[in-house]
Length: 407
Image 1 (tube, rainbow, N blue to C red):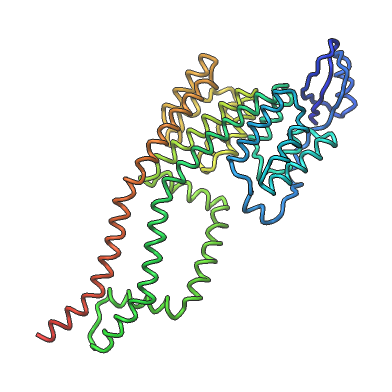
Image 2: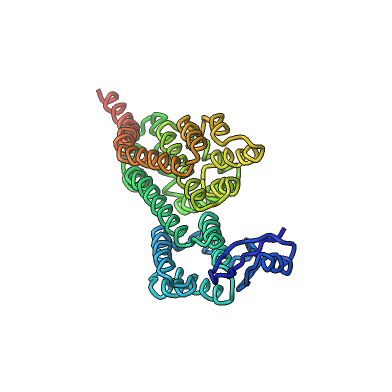
């Protein structure tokens, strides 16, 4: 049944917003009038997922950082709480924003608001900028009349997500730099330094060991077919990116992350922290349990966490408590998650309990990321040492053979 978002005034002159379901707009208007309301605006809610006014390149780069969205939500909350209309607040933020792309989007949102569209409806037109979580929480704030409070919750949510993402990326920068440097040095040695050494081996006319032949073969491949190797890596990278966007690719990378010893613990804690905070924020904003779980399932990136939550929705609809469902999913949700959920369900303070759980896991992630470099460093040292040792042995073996023949 269609859903309509309305703004009305009651008999005392107070403005109220909300949503109502009816077969058509006329019936919705009649029902509101029967309740004694004077209708100031009413519009059908439509999720226009297919009508996206975004260029092709925007599919790969959203162009608006989490920090910018956090500042946007925080400033908008302050303005709305101060009595500024949403359309005027958006116009003010458009003037202040330095990001040209975000400025353009805010300008288009402002035009939509001027045409009478609901704020959440205008945001839904930019799914790569404003997630399902953002759009749905704004919609709840509009219908509940507490938009400034919801925007403040959103700002806090985005801030925590930004901190979490920054810590994980920061911990991975060091090993990424080392690996890239090692590959660069390896290619330099194989293409420029090794050919000079192999020329000496040809003059010696000696039988080369298998390891030496292997290294020389890679060197010849890189030197004679350098463009083919570059093209191979470019297309390999594109193929890998496209593969990771498929269901099989998502399942593969998600499975590897959950079984690889060095990152398994971090992946579990990050996903649990994100689930707890997002679910808590949605419940606090007034979103129903089923709708909140659907939004959370679209927020998480790991395939097995998405599947676990989507499977839980059907069980919750049957009346099963979420804590009991999670208790049977120990591979993705540690026992502490189901226990904390159970406490929240029994006391009626699920959102408060989940917020504490999110803070607990975020602190755990903070500690892991601090120690991650010290964990990865020995592995990198072994990898670098093994590579250098293999290369040295491959180059020195023929020389020892020549010296033995001289004796």
